[in-house]
Image (cartoon, rainbow, N blue to C red):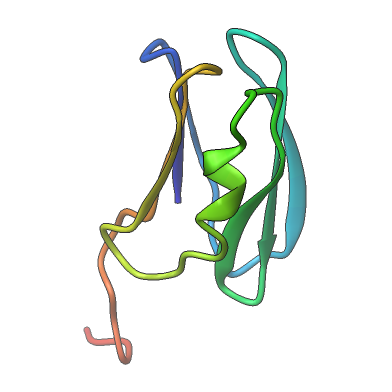
Length: 85
């Protein structure tokens, strides 16, 4: 999973490890929860809270965007069913 803040900071976290992240954006802190291979926003400083309403995402290409706080979350990477050599 990739998190971008104001197109200047980029963070990459695996969905395989449960964690809670507080990401500082343009107008405050966005809380992001990674759990059971999924991610969602649980706290946002924006007035409409549309990013929270998206709910859980888990598939490559899905995204959550908080425009007022300039926080962008996107599921990236390859999807594998097994390990090959």
